[in-house]
Image 1 (tube, helix red, strand yellow):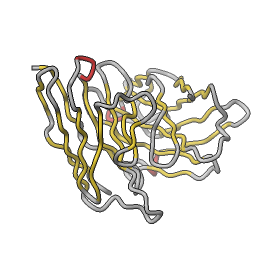
Image 2 (tube, one colour; image 1 turned 120 degrees about the horizontal axis):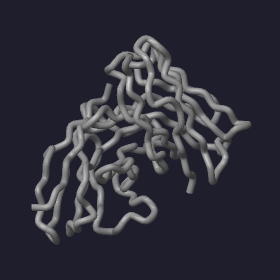
Image 3 (cartoon, each protein chain N blue to C red; image 1 turned 60 degrees about the vertical axis):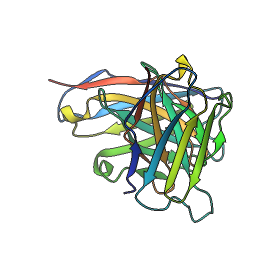
Length: 118
Length: 111
């Protein structure tokens, strides 16, 4: 089964861009049929889908975040990335990367806490 | 957006007894391809979520058979036939028929 690991700064200043990377091991990010997702969880709260990129390169974003989100893939490094611009304290959360075939999220990273603060 | 509503939000259960969680969607989850993309996830304390059930009733690899899913259209249920101590956590339903949205979560705890 695919393993995922998030990495990136744990602290981001307000108005800046949050950038995270998910490194994939145990499988190829170019594998057909897989959706590569970012999901976040505000402290003590439920799950919020941010978006995903299909293996073909097509992207789909949560409409509420769409104007600020970019998800991309680097096949040479077997990684995919999240950029969230113009962050505020409301973007403080644990960010997870996840993957699965249509309609599933069968593999998850351990999550990384990102705090937005000056 | 499809809104997912779970009930109850908290479920105290006696060890060895059954538990049931309901999930209702604001519109049908039947996709144009004929599939219904409704999953159930378990999140143990301090852990990432884990897939239990996909497409209403299919148990994911390694998931004990005491977990079962059922339903159709807009109404779905997760059942635990006999709750064990390791089942403590928060359970989420998730739809992926139209983008992705999650239920609020149901906390299962031992009485």
